[in-house]
Length: 85
Image (cartoon, rainbow, N blue to C red; front, side, top):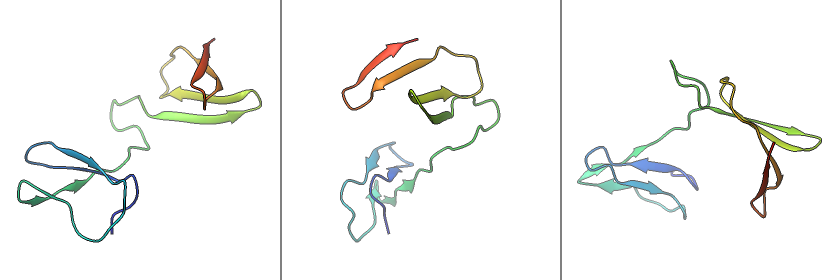
């Protein structure tokens, strides 16, 4: 059974679908079953863009991989306010 927010891709035309309402049945595109995409949770090979999310006393700290990048401090994530630090 499909899950809410699960993402599928057609291997023929490349259409991408996100599940917004779970129901019975299968997703078919171009006459074939659509492939369920899996989240990447670890670095694969040279990929260094897996996010690391950490809750701190000042808010939420997000780092992308282990490459030294600019840190962005988020003050109010609900209002999309942020401050570069």
